[in-house]
Structure formats: structure tokens, C-alpha cells
Length: 130
Image (cartoon, rainbow, N blue to C red):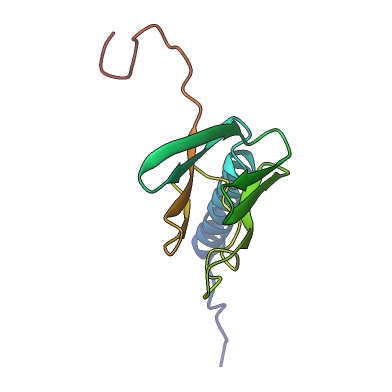
């Protein structure tokens, strides 16, 4: 009895095409994540009790005392709550923030740290206007 090969040339070509596509997608998303993580042109905005307290660029290392209750630090393009006098310390245990829209909140002290992208002048041109 003659055995036949279960894989044909077309099968091998299809498997190779899928593998190449998977590798390309992996490389694309890996490069995209590296370039977008740590928004170096991001701005850290601090609000206390709903009022704007201060704003700082993420690309400058800095320790910020927020009143007598909290201490925030910006280091290597990331911001985190270094210390707080609140009882649960959940803001201190939060992960550092570095991307647009990320937030750290200290509810007892009503302190909010939020990262946003730096707005650059684009002369009013956007994807809709041309």
C-alpha cells in the first residue's frame, strides 16, 4: 500500500503565509507599543478638590508636594504618588501613569493625577478639514 503525504505544496505555502503575517503583526504592534508607551510629551495635571493645582511635563524628573497631604514624583516619563497621609494608601500602591487618560486618585484627600497629551498647534487642520 502506498502512503500519501498529508501536506501538499499549497498547504505549506498557506502555513508559511500565515506565519509571515503573524510575525509582521507582532513586530508592528511591538514597535507601536514601544513608541507610544511613556508619553514623553505628556503633561501631568494635578487637581485638588476639583480645582486645578498645577501641571508639569512628564519629560522632567520632579518631586511635587501637594499641600500637606500628598507627594507625587515624576521619574523617567512616569508619574506616581510617592506618599500620602490617607489611611488606605491605595493611591500610593497604584501603578505609575504615563499614557494619555491614565489617572491616580486619592479619594480621602481629593487629589487627582491625570496624564494628557501635550497639545501642539496644528493651524486648525485636522482629519476632517482639508
